[in-house]
Length: 372
Image (cartoon, helix red, strand yellow):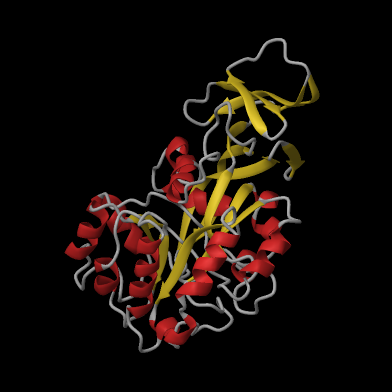
């Protein structure tokens, strides 16, 4: 007898029937109809969609910070996200404490380690290059190898002040010592440093987040075309991640990028307490609605929060609805013909007529009702 049987679900790829059997913490079987299943708990999904558990690869959920913080479960399983990756809130000095806190959470929590030892204790955490030390960073990565999945470097002027791309250059040296394929996520914003200088250092093992912001130091030139150096980075395999956030996703910028084919491989929220409560982020589902509005299929949108981020951060047991993978699942409905207003990071508004509504999450085999 298995622990959990989800019946009468629907596949996001083609609306075909989908059922899942869970044994312990793993998916045991997936099919249109599973016959003869005996389970301790059976849940009738009544035609709701069932997908691999959503992964948000850019969050800020170390609760002890003052600038950017939240509860991993509030931005995680309670909102339909089964796995969150904190994007460098902590560095070598405090990531151990963050790790211990997350062991008590329902949501699967991983972290990128900030290239600076202190993490984001202050907005300018990379102003002093003395905070970027190889030995403690490497020791933390070794000690918390089941938790730390990448390095984070915030490359905007308010963070690095006069250090330009020096923090990223140091991060790339650390990456090389780790074998070359340990991912680095790079936050971009106001200049200096120039986006061109940042992207010049990045390769196929790196993730650019906030790429679709509306700031002057962005992917568009003065006449509104995508800059050539952006295309060069995109074509050599740099992963473009949304990283919506309070100030980093602009409809006009994305109109141009989307039309040109500069599409994001992963969708993330950059969520923390204030932009969860006050917007414009609110939650992952609202962020996904924006990409449905742009004409992406449900299958495409869900892949950008499941298999794609799992690949970026080497989460080898997550991201797929297949036997043997972790039993992380998101169950949701797609409410049609219901008018909603979507808001970007610059308070531009657009109307849309569909809304993704998470109803239930399954995290490592345990089911949690989250919606009506």
